Image (cartoon, rainbow over all chains, first blue to last red; front, side):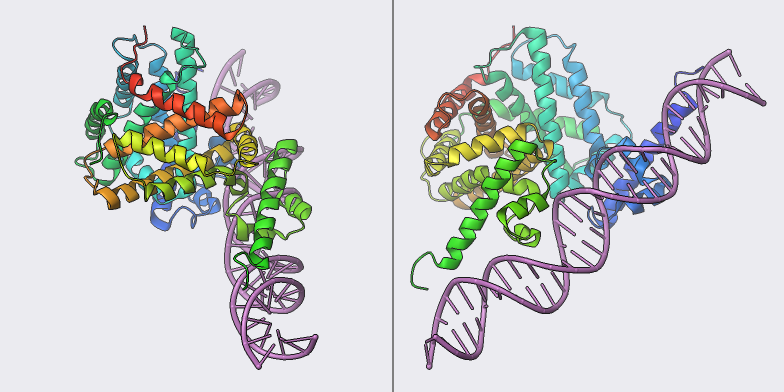
Length: 206
Length: 206
DNA sequence: GAGGTAAATGCCACTGAGTGCCAAAAGACT
DNA sequence: AGTCTTTTGGCACTCAGTGGCATTTACCTC
């Protein structure tokens, strides 16, 4: 091969992106269940057999944008130098991963994806499951890098789940009440949610 | 009808329980995917059509035990008097719900169910999705009872997610390293996880 | 205890997701 | 050009899940 991105690779990326965009479009228009994979594949001019070489399931294709973020999170976590609390380490890692997402297009796809997930239980379930797998992978990284492998200490896991909870909150607020609907808007809400974490423990109801 | 539990109701409960127990048994033996609903229905001597009048999906039947717990959680949350922090309210509610589960049989079913879910992605996804729906329902209860309906305050949601995170931790530890494997064993681990929550925020990595 | 009612079940045909297999096409390299 | 390797398409198949309708079964009344 002569270039870093061969024709073959470029075609694959184009097919993948076409499937994602067309899927988000059709699912949003006609609904997730009402859209069949046969329709989608016909629109992208790809056989159903090929679809399943790119994505593991019908849900998967619509969740791709968020999955990119978590992949970047794991990637960043492997190299980031710790400073301060564990919670802060997680937070900085997630914000850094967010900063690595494409400035154009990515945020819009996430918006479509999340709104879709909110009214499609199987999509939401798929997303949560992916989140769960990612947090387990993140804990593995923690164990390998810092030796936090005391199976009786729940705190590394709990801290990670707190960050995920904050992320979900920020994502939902951003999805349904966006101010600008871009990456930085989401980052701002993430910071707000992170800031609210310590005070949450002491909150009283009355 | 003369008795509180008519013959009809008793039969329905028996069928439901037979489906759950047989499903847990077969899924554990041969694996979730390898077991078809036709097999399961044949074993319980019930038509597949009837199966879907009891459970919404193949995953659903194997997650029934945990769902009972969350139903009790919601139920208790509607009446419990708040005292102390919001986090403590959630914790007490969950422990109370746990206390209402049948002392016999329930814990064993949960054990089977969770071990199955750990090696069956679609089951795990289903469980997480149910958890998510329950937390949203719980937040609705909070709003109605205490007027915590400020959409800009993430803390009620975050606190609930913290309790859920602690629950997941406790459940997993109990599932794979049980001491006695009964309800009280799980309750003890829950208390440990709850106790670890406040210190989690300040934990440092180095 | 026979007969009517309503609920629960069974049966059948159907849709659509997802997979295995093998042949055909297309990019890569010499 | 020709050859090798990766990717794709087509086909047949399994199985989860659903709608519709006939059949059974518990319930209730006389």
